[in-house]
Length: 236
Image 1 (cartoon, rainbow, N blue to C red):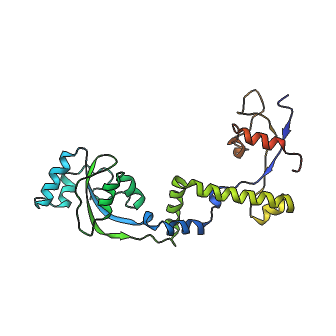
Image 2 (image 1 turned 90 degrees about the horizontal axis):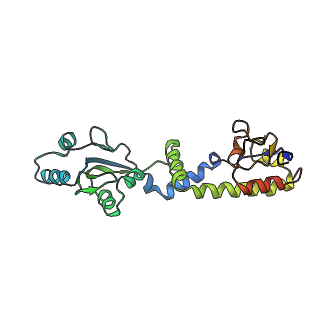
Image 3 (image 1 turned 135 degrees about the horizontal axis):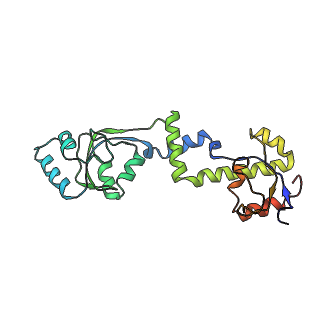
């Protein structure tokens, strides 16, 4: 009898792509240091003994930093010239997980060379070639980078916005109508195939199709989804 009760739903989806560009830019500007580009060269080593020897040689001017890149560095996380593969602050933070070492690197002035610091994968000696370059948040590529960071580290901000937007839509649709509010909010109304109360998409019952109803497949093990969806009356 579980297969007898079928429902067809009209629905709109609030996706992360709908998060406003102005909010992305505002977040970037409020956390500008995270998206600055640092001009750093890095010698990388697997053990602590090798960088200590290299540090002494650099201090005695027995070798230049650039020559050490060629002869001494493993080049983990750098190009052939020792430049970080990604020099944005977010990457620098991950490269130097210990706060003391990160602070040492960030405080380097132009042409200054650090002491031996610990990285996420070994040890390093870092040289600053120029002051950090501030991010331009008017550029689309910068905003994309900010949004990518937010999706990884600040999902709550995005989800809270979309949830509130969905709640506002729901309340307005109860008054003004589902179709009208979808049009006002530039949302596409989609229609599901007939859906049965099939928690977990069990093969013995009619299943939700991942091709035709991909949105609903995300809820197949969500008890709250089924309770709310199948409690709705026609037109509710």
